[in-house]
Amino acid sequence: MTETIFALSSGAPPAGIAVVRISGPGAGQALLALAGSLPPARRARLSSLRDPRDGALLDRALVLWFPGPDTATGEDLAELHCHGGRAVIAAVEQALASLQGLRRAEAGEFTRRAFANGRMDLNAVEGLSDLLAAETQQQRRAALLMAEGHFSQRVEQWLRTLLDLSAMTEAALDFSDEDDVPDHGIETRIGQGVRILAEDVRAVLASPSAERLRDGVRVVLAGPPNAGKSTLLNRLVGRDAAIVSDVAGTTRDRIEVPAALGGTAFLFTDTAGLRGETGDAIEAIGIDRARGALEAADIILWLGPADEAPREDAIVIAAQCDRHAKADRPGLPLSAVTGEGMDRLASMLLERAAMLLPGEGDYALHQRQREGAARLHAHLTSAQGSDDLLIVAEELRQARHAIDLLTGRAGTEDMLDRLFAGFCIGK
Image 1 (cartoon, rainbow, N blue to C red):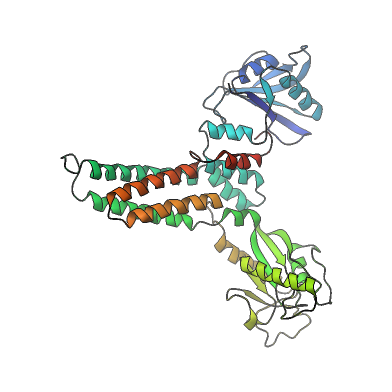
Image 2 (image 1 turned 135 degrees about the horizontal axis):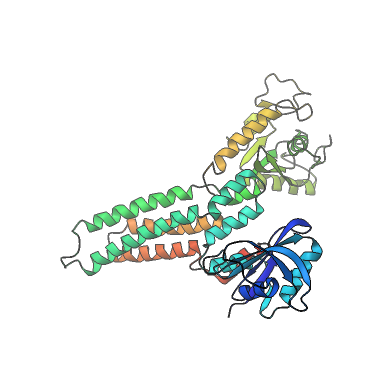
């Protein structure tokens, strides 16, 4: 029998209001034990909460009763909206813990029950996880779209199309000599349907990366020693994150600093100055790591000679323009000391980031989702390239399995454990 769980689902005390959630088959009995009676379903009622052990008054609170299965978790659910003081919360939780069959919830357990009971699929769960961790408005918007099931609805459309195509394929295989097969053009329609579906999946695969949205657009500052990289980093992030010195080779290792510009998350990386040879073994390691950072960069700010930029799309910075003549120096004139050029640089970074991140009304795909969609696309491509209906039928079956992995209908417990462990208690 499923256990009944409870937890504080609102913010850490003290707070104006504390929401204690109870979910499971014993939720109604727990509410009866503390409040004396059940309120009308889905209607709040002011009640006196009493300790079932001795009848002592715990608090005056709003109580709500949500009979399952049409609830957030798919089970009977109760909520106690108490005063948010630490002592009140502790007393209510102790009273609930004293009831037989009740226990404190583990991290992510309410959401896991919602998933297990079909109230959410795995994509919506990942969206909720991103929503809880969102720090910028862009992250919030994309996570909310995923949590509300926009991607899941697209996947369900794929599944319905696949089921239709699979049925047509089986009909062509099993009943080709019978009169109830639509016509001899069924194979052509199957091929056209598979092609259109594959194109739609490929379009979704072009969606931005959720990891980039969550961690920030990777901006790497690179160039020769003493080019002004560390000073520029400090100006961009608004604090002294990197040591600034006239001594060449001061920055030995990568320095990564997250920051938000214009509501967009960035991860700025200061790197060791690049030069051909160095007698310092530690500096040599730093240079190797700088080159590794350049390979992984979304955007490169190059503070060296324009003709030595590591990529064609690098933003060339004519740094330290307060100290050097601007004539004949290609790139954006900029001084991290005086602020000249900083507004223009911020605009350029935001313009580049907008091409890498989801726009208004778009969601972003996690690596798991991208791998699942790529697997689905591969099976559709194989089906599209075959004239053998037996192979087409098998590829479509594998494509349906890929969708089950996407939605969480099929998967491993280890992966689910890792996902839900990242949630807070009470969610």
